[in-house]
Image (cartoon, rainbow, N blue to C red):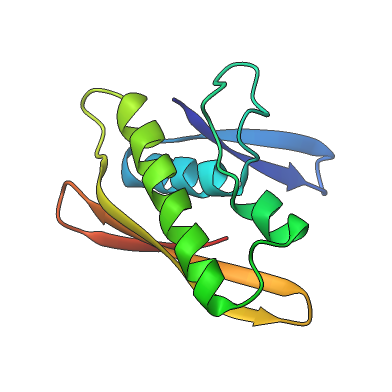
Length: 125
């Protein structure tokens, strides 16, 4: 899978696309997969998780249940990333999704990503 950064250049009134590569590409793909609703991609039908639908529909009611469903989303994401990795690009060795805050109807997760290169990265969804 490929990744892009989209930047809005207000001064020039244009949109600038920049290619993502390496670890940045992998981190972006992890974050997008975690946040995307499973089955919503026509190109990758297996892409996404049920994490945010579960938060909206009620199974996630506290940090304990958020931790359980975050773990399921981590496994789904790890399988998807590995099935679609690009040869020669760093990939994910291990992934955990941990709920960090749940207040006022807002739920944030941190994805701890251990890369095959040995580095550990984090992203918040």
